[in-house]
Each structure stands twice: as C-alpha cells, then as structure tokens.
Image (cartoon, rainbow, N blue to C red; front, side, top):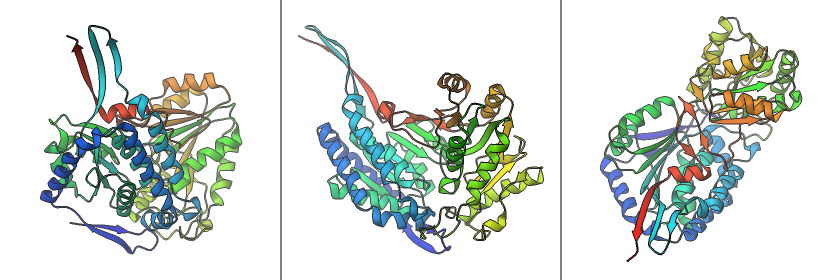
Length: 458
C-alpha cells in the first residue's frame, strides 16, 4: 500500500511512502523488543540526555521544518512552526523524570524493604495526528523513551515526513535506531499487530472512529491505551469578564491553524449583557484575516489540511444557515476560498444545539456564539456535548471559575485562557474524547507499570 500526502497548497502530490508488510512490521517489532532491555538498563540521566539531544537536533532543523509543514498540512510559515511548544513539553518531562519515576518507598527497615517501582511497558506504539504533528508526537515519545520503553511512531498520512524527521534527529543524537523507529503502517497491519500483543502500550490521538477501531483490535489483549479523540471545546464569557481579552483569546482559539486544534474553541457562550459587543469585536478580528498560500508571510489563515475536512465544515455551516443561523463574515472578504482546501472563516449566531455545528466536531474555522442568561444556563449548554477535553471560563473571580469548572464535564478547566497544553498538568479527557492521560507525572505513570518489591532481609 502507498501512503500519499496531497499538499493542501495546490493539490499536488507532496510525498509518497510504501507501508510495511505484516512480516516486515513484525521484524521491526522484534528488533525493538530485543533492544529495549539494554535501553532500559541505561542510567535514567543518560536516557534523559539523549532524548533532549534529539529534541535540540529537531530545533536545528526548524528552518527546513516550517515550510515543509506548510506544504504537508497548510499552517502559515509566519507562525514559525512548533519547536517552542515541542521543546517546552519535552523539557518539562525531562525535568520531572527522576521524581516521577522514583520508587514509592513503603518500608526500609532492618527487616524489610518494601517499595513500588515504575517499570517500562516494553514497546510503546505512538499514533500521532497531522494537526500539530511535532507537539502531539513528543507528548508520548519523550516520556516513553525516558522511562525506558522502545517506541514505534506511526504518523498520520498527511504528515509522513514528520516521523522521518524525528527519527533522524533522535538517531543523530545517539538514541539507538531500534529503540526509536518511525514506521509506515496501514490500518489492517496496525490492528493485526495490536491483536497479536506486539505492544505493551498504545497511545493514539485522532478520531473517535479511530479510537474505537484500536480498542476493537486490542479487545482481550489487556493492552493499555491512551486515547485522545474528538472534541467540541466550549468557551464561556461571564458578565464580569475582560471583554477584550476574552474576544482576542477565544477567537484565536477558534481560528488558529484553520481551526484544526485538538483543544480549539468550537462553541462560545456569552452572557447576554456582553453578547452584542463580543460578536462585534469577533467579527472585526476575523474579517481582517488573510486567507492564502501558507508559504506567503502575509498569510494569517492557511488552507485546511485536506479538501474533505473543509467540505465537512462547509456542510455543517450550510445546514446551520438553512436552520436559521446567521453568518457574520462576508465571503467577498475572502476571495481565496476556492471551494477546496482553502476555506474562509465564519462566525455564526442564532445557533442552537439542534444544529450539527454546535454538536459535532467541526475542526475548522467556524464557531457558533450563543447568548446565555447566567452560569446555570452556560453550564447546561457546555455539558450538552458528547465530548470533554477543555473548557474556557472568562471571569475576574477565580472562585467563580472554580465553582463553574467543578460542574463541567471536561478534562481541563481554563480561566482566562484557552487552547494551551500545560505540560505540568495531566492532558486528559472524558466522554467520547477518550481516556488516559499524557504529560505531567501521570503521563509517566501511564507509560510505565507498577511493580511491587517485598524484600525480607535474612
């Protein structure tokens, strides 16, 4: 099977790669497992140093990576790539590794030594998405390697060069080739490997359908899984919010990366006293975007990664308008919208939860905005979703934010910020967003297993 990356810039074939056969994939798995024990036996600080040297090597490639990313998935070059967040996440996980992986001491006496160690799963499969292909991959790759696992990285077909870049950087830094492998696998081979218990742990970021397929493949194997799936993240602007900051941040959270952010803002609820002013300011911001070629430094909004993604957003928007929603962005401001991957942004009001644009994941540059009477109505609407990744609350009162947050079914509660992944906190979700947790101390706990020692001294 051939994996083909179609560039959203012009629809041309940017890269093709052949997938491994099942026999070839099994040989790769065997090589990884044979090398893992020696890797885990290295001192922890040695593993940390090698991983961080690989991270630094990625940074040295950034001038090449930024336009390469634009050609693969459409993010404008003006934003400079992902290295800042990539480095922040890896650095934090390196910083906390000794403490996070330290044994839990229960007793150390003249008679007994009892403790709980953290040991690697063995071989970890990381299945990474295309929307933030470096940052999402490093969330698992860095701590998995630091914890002593071998890692196989299967990257999205839209961003096939990312896995190759990461493998090259880490190998040049000294991480053994068998310990960190980039692989091209089709869905059937991936499922067969999981069913065959090839992996000790699987971390997947992607669609709900993809997560279900992996769970079906793993059924009965007891393979651990971390699943970050769909999202429909809400923002709520309370009556005491800093309106300017709320508009700037929430609209950026809805539109940045053409709306293709795991924790992007997809629906906004605004207290009725601020609603009109919020919408007016939001329209002013979005109308000033420049949709165009992501290789052009003047472009602020690039194409979506693929025409089929843009078509889904167009369908949701058209259905909402047919059901009575109001569109606020004038198509004449965005002549680059070509009916293909280049999609103009849109703000919708007069929306309801009967509309798919307020229920289904859009993952594109469209956001619906609704007025609410009070916190109770906002909480009810925020919870009226199949998903639960993040929620953004805008208020000057931290106690109020915490009280609202306690009532929201979500993985992360933000006050006065949005669309940010804090590596010190557990990255997790609930409901159809999935299960498990990445980064933080908990990320290490998920990428290792507990092993108890009860040692009686002679």
